[in-house]
Image: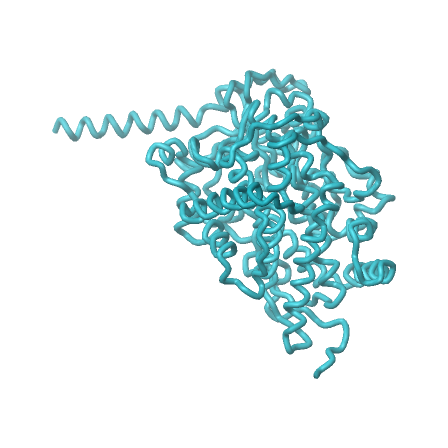
Length: 528
């Protein structure tokens, strides 16, 4: 009898604790959503009712007159910020109050030493160290490595003895993104289209593998990171992490021993450790509208930087983790849009051919960046299919959101409050982008850019902690499509899902049934 009563009291106590936690926003007088018990507001995601982007878009659209909404990620309170002016305050004007991201990687491991996981002064120092790597002058330096992967893509499909190659293009672009990261980040040369069994690609797949076990493991870490840290459980493959760690350490030793210089990230970091780096931006070369501008606080000259091999390895893993899925997905969705919008593709192919003739079949960094319509198409792809579904920020020190409307009261955010900025929803808001489901590159023509509401087009984030690799991602996408469209036209096939749907239950923007397209030769194949 005693144990029965004790169990009942324990259940009641736990229930009370959970319910009281779910009253967090209502106690502050903030509108909060009808949450699901235990799951919070992500229950539609957990039960595969929609994708993460669609879930946030629904919450965003359900409260059109509110500047912020209280919601819950499992038991954790989250403030969803939807007002553009407030977003700018958080990411730029009052950036010192919202300096850090919520933890993405397990604490006290080499994973937290990368720029995406670092916080405070350590992050500031690493951002300033890495910023010179992503200037247009350095992009030109690495362009040959990036362009080479596009050539490999075309060569791979050109070898097929078919006039129409039917392909799940996302898988092909995943291999291309893998090879670019291997080359410009880790200093490795590989051709994963021809040799999908190479060690780098195998380990990449181990980290980014899909499946129920990985999903549960990843969500488990997000829900209870301290529990994972206590039991030293990693949401990623430990063998793969060890591989990348050893790869960087061995490469660093080899380069320092033989004084090897290569146009990649490792060389930049080794130079920073040896002599320091200066931010040297080339002007009037980069025409990419979506490229974020680097904050002035990151452009100071750094003297010799004290950076360990472990930190260098962690940077490499961080850039792999950030770029592998995002860039390949962007290219896959761009392929789909070109396939179902033949008029847009025809105009882009015309620009490709004009550029190709102007540089005698040898594409250059300057020629690629001069392609205005290519930039419009890439920008519209990033708008409609943003891979950064949400930005998260942590309140580093107490901050008060002052009222803007008569029915608002000052909202005091305590230290460690987590904020979400729903990029996917903002970029599909008809207030900012009329008829948002339509793929319309004309939104980003030189004449129409002035009509874009300031602060609404932020696919790479906003403020000093925006995406450091935006220029690399855009350059990679443009280079691959330049080479692809030189030889092929992208067309819909029987397997193409039209309209394309997002996979339910997933946090990234992933096509539900893959991205199947046909690659149709633009020129008759010469048979030997």
